[in-house]
Image 1 (cartoon, helix red, strand yellow):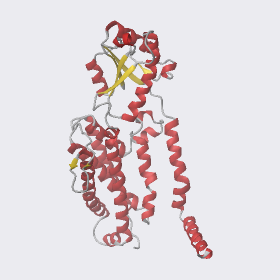
Image 2 (cartoon, rainbow, N blue to C red):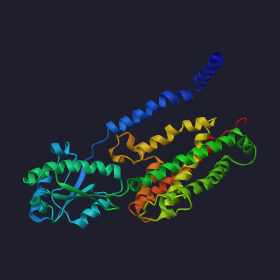
Image 3 (cartoon, rainbow, N blue to C red):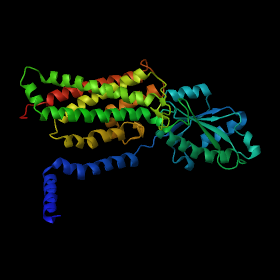
Image 4 (cartoon, rainbow, N blue to C red):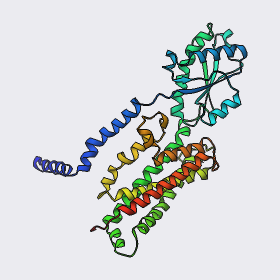
Length: 393
């Protein structure tokens, strides 16, 4: 082994990186920016109070618990007014309606047998109900309510042994559903957006590097026609990709044992409360938007590696800000309008409403999500056409 030759290769790599400012930025600047963004989101989230409703089915005993919960809200156990409770109780039907319409975050149900377990030392039995549409956010909200209940029950039921027994119920799905079932709408949207963006960006870059785009620009074909044609062409493969991903996510095929191979399952069998075709439409519009974005971004790259450099700039922030892990309302103030301008925000919201909440095309939220995805896709088609330029292949 020649040390001189190895050293020469090392010096060549170092010199190559020194001349590539984008790569240097990817190595040194982008990690700092993303870490700062994540730290900003986690440390400066706005403390929006959990809107808690109470349903009392336990008569006088339940009324005492409800009164103490209302009086205790905002105390030390509730972590400085992070729980907001109305002055009275509501019916079960009204509570479900409030949850479905996002006017309440959590509902405390005091069942008829709430205090029946005191005689056997089992403590107070309570039910905490959430919507069931956003597992990460709702888990934090339930935790805040549980802190409130521990203090409240100790005051309302002095003889209660320890913390209350709390059962978690949901309006949509089941409280003990597989974690992927609750998060699948977000991940379907994210994977579609990520993979289609990479496919389109690299493919369109090859068209430019290979000289195909240059030759097209020398013909009467307009830039708008070029971008629209490529968008529809790449859109065919994006459609196939969405079909495969949606089918694998929603379907389940049990393959029996064959010879030495044991039985296995293909597909995730994620339940969809709404129309799979409507969910497919949302994912498809997101994919078409990713196609036009990939074409637009590729005009600023000269190598395939530079296309990959856009991932932490274009894709990763959308994963952090699109409402997958935190409600947009809890993000720091300056980031909220940014989050509401991201296509992945509307795709994730639309897929959640369809697959988890079972809403259809008549729902105003679904209509808004579809409309915004169409507008964003069209916007990037226009931007891509405006940035295409002639260059020597």
